[in-house]
Image (tube, rainbow, N blue to C red; front, side, top):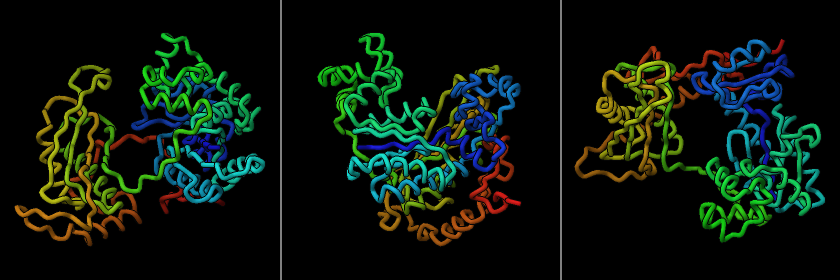
Length: 427
């Protein structure tokens, strides 16, 4: 058996945790640059506020119904997510939890006796909510796909299920699949859902599970489709994945808070993103041999320019792989100059580091001078200061001082758990 634990309206739950007055009041959280709604409480959903809808289109409803609005506070959400996942590991044991996203985790329950399963599932929910303050829903099934089906139904009718649903018997599985539209099956995207409904008249998950494996191989993406059919039938095919300790590529990308027009601001942004990527690189003790810079821009006049963007990118290979921020910035800025054209609005930029190697065993280059040991001591000192003090206390001048292009977060709450000067006060 597999369980999936899913935090209910996670971003909103994090905001409510430190603002008790928001309980029972509708809350929404916005995406980068306060653009779209990415998290809603049940009260906000009842008002007709849609997921991923633009903030400005819902503003009248939000103001009329006194809806609390927050910018995304990723420092707070990331820290609380870690607490939730650590709590689940304390219950399920080491190696039994796969973190699927910031607010979801699969748990392997194969070693749990059937008679003890209800008690353990209840403990997963109650201890997580008690230790973290974040409400969760738990779905359990013979496979990962069926556990997702169970979780969806548990959240859909919270009062009846208590946010817990366990699918054990064949009858329970069949009933759950018949109540699940095919478009809501984990692994069925928008295009496949349209194809299944319009071309094959498959409307729910039960009808999909009755299709043959040979049909799935031809019409549902080959081996991936076959696995999906088997999972719906209760045959485990998707095992828990080991956490990816060492990444093969590292990227840092951001939308600008407002369109950028000048080369100087674009270079500041890319230098800042390069520094952030270099920190991630050093955290896993790697060095990069390839650096790729891209920009997203638009030269269409009028208010709708952001809906017609296009991107350009350029890359370079380092003679000797490096994790030193100064060295990576030195290679990134000429790429920005190559990409920049005066006139278009620049909406986004990003830096990608590839061809990663362990920084303890870097292959030298006969035609390049030896570097000063990757400036390891300087980089360690910088990382330690910035980690303890936050907000890039120590940074390279190329990153700029004003940073007018930074992402908009006008409605962000305090970072209660990661900043000394923003700690929650109790009187």
